Image (cartoon, rainbow, N blue to C red; front, side, top):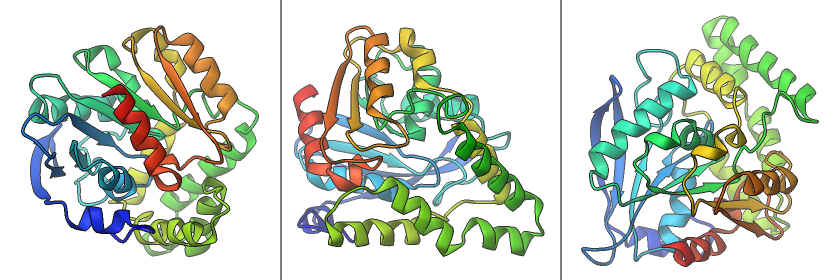
Amino acid sequence: MRLHNPLERALADRPVRVRSRSLAGSSTVVRGYPGATADAPTIVLVHGFRGTHHGLLPVVAAMPEARFIAPDLPGFGESAPLPGRHSLDGYAAWLRELLDAEDAGAEAIVLGHSFGSLVVARDAAALGGRRLVLVNPIAENALQGPDRLMTGIAIAYYRLGAALPSRLGRALLGAPLITRVMSEVMATTRDRALRAWIHDQHRRHFSEFASRRVLLEAFEASVSDEVRAHAAALPPGTVLVAGERDAIATPVAARRLAAAVPGSTLHLLGGVGHLAHYEAPLALARVLREHL
């Protein structure tokens, strides 16, 4: 992965171990980045919808002292699809198995970004009391908020892509113009070079999905729930990181979520949209260090 800034060298210098694990009935590709010491804190990364492990690598680069576990979610990147439906329950079961395999002592921090926040929160009570960090969390259901019309259009888009003949449907779902529009909505930085890099990352990795069925099911899962519905199950000390300019997971929704989660802490990053891990990885790393 090429980074926009000096974090590029920091990531290139880090050793990585790539392995495949059998989880939830499918094969998951997991990348492990060792920490600076044997007792380094461990952070498990759960990326967002249509993404892969690449999206959260700027955080890995920004924290050389920590150990990271960075899987591709089933059906995305190099990981095989789940044998059943790609629902939040299916992904939550997968996450439990991943944590049992990678963090048997239940000592890791689990970081979920966007859709990943829903995966983490879906069965939070079963995560063994691990500390949680939810970045750009989907605090409120997209089908019930002010953007429900746009959400309905997006559902129709993914359903059309799944219904069309294979070649045409894949071309629609992976169309560069559609990817660029999505990227423009999510990226709010005024740094032109950074915006160009973010758009390039989405161009490279936003269409690494296993099939049109996987993409449709995962999108339907992403609009089927909200983190606030699971607020009572989130452990005390849960950390919430929101973007001041996030139009998808708004600061207002993040504040409501923080009020609903006992003992939580909300960090609002100024000048940041729905891509805190891309736009402000150093700020996100500072938040993580504060709570390690």
